[in-house]
Image 1 (cartoon, rainbow, N blue to C red):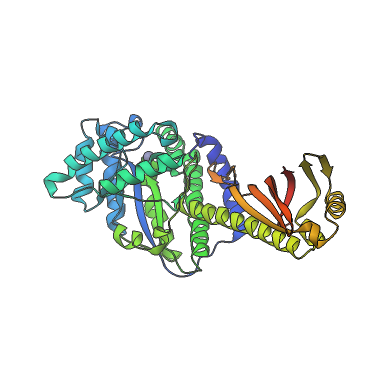
Image 2: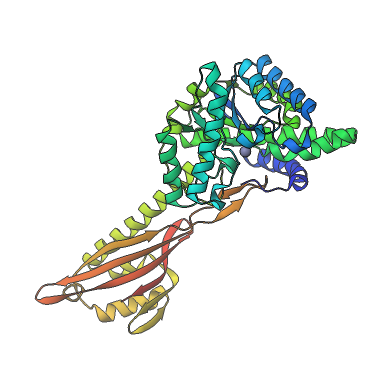
Length: 430
Ligand SMILES: [Zn+2]
C-alpha cells in the first residue's frame, strides 16, 4: 500500500538499497521477460502540470518506449481524461502502438469502498475507455486495481472477479512496484527551483530504488516457481520523473538480463495462473500474495498434521508423545480448573488415564481453523503480509471406550510457531 511519504522515502531509499543488496545480493539467473505497465494515464498527478508539460511528458515517455522496442500497457484513469487534452494524449499512446487498459474512473481504494460503488466506478472507467478505443476498432481487455487493492473481504474479491469475467476483462497483476510515483512531487519541485544538487540526489535514489525492487522481486518470483526465469510485470506511473529516467533504467535492465515482452506473452505464463484468494487491506505485488497463500496453507496443514499425530500417540497409549506438542509453559483450562506447564499436564493425564482401557480411542475433528496474520512494512514504506505465527483450532474431541459410554466435547487450541515447530500454548477443553 502506498503511503504518501515521498521525502521520507527518498531518505530511506539509499538505506533500502544498501541493506537489500547487502542482505540478498540479488543476482537472478537467465533472461527474464518483462511487461512494462504504466498507471494513471493520461498523466499521473495532473494538477502538477499544464497542457504543454503533459504533452511533453507523454512524448518523452513514448520516445523511450520506441527506442527500447517496448510495447507497454498504459492504465487509464477515466477522470484523468477530464482536462481537454486528455483524449489527445491517449491518442498519442495509441498512435505509437501502445495498448491501453482500464484503471477505473475515479481511482477509488477498494478497501474503503462498498462493492456496488466500486463496481460502478470500474464500469464507468471501462465505458470511457471503450469510447476512446472504438473508432480504431480496438476493445479494452486489461484492468488494474488502484492501489493494487483487490478486496479486503472474500465477498469483495469475488465481486470484482465476477465483474471482470463477465466483461471479458483481465486483472493485470504487478510484480515490481518501486513506489516510483512518490518521487514525482519532489522531482518537479526541484526542477522548477533549478536545484541541481537535489535533482542529482533524486535521480540516484529513483534509479536505485527501482533497481533494488526489480532484482529482489525477480529473485522471489524465481524461487516461488522452481528457479526458472519467471516473467515480471513492472509498475511505473505516467509522470515527469519517469520520463526523465526510464531510458537509463531500461538500458541498465538490459545489462542485467531482462528483455521487454508483450502483455500476451508475459500474462500467458503459468505463474500468473496460480490461483490465490488473498484478502487484505493493502495492495501489493502478486508474488507476496502467492507466497502468503502458500504460507497459510502450509501452516494449516502442519497444524492439522500435528493434531493427527497427537490422536495417533494417544491411541498408542503414549501420553508423553501426546503431550510433546505442548509448549513448556502451555496453559490448560478445563472444567476442573487451570493447569500450567507441559509437565503438570502430563502428570494430570497420567493420573486420570492410568491405562489403555481408561484412555480409549481418541478422535479429534477440526471444526474451525484460523491462520491470522498482520502486515509488515518494508524499507520502501510498503505494507506486505507478515508471517503466520499463530494458528487457532476449534476441534471436537471424542473418546470411545469398550463397554462404556463414549465421552465428547470441544477444545480450543492456540498454536504458536516456536523454534521452527508448531506448539500448543493454550488449550481450553470442555
Ligand atoms: Zn493508480
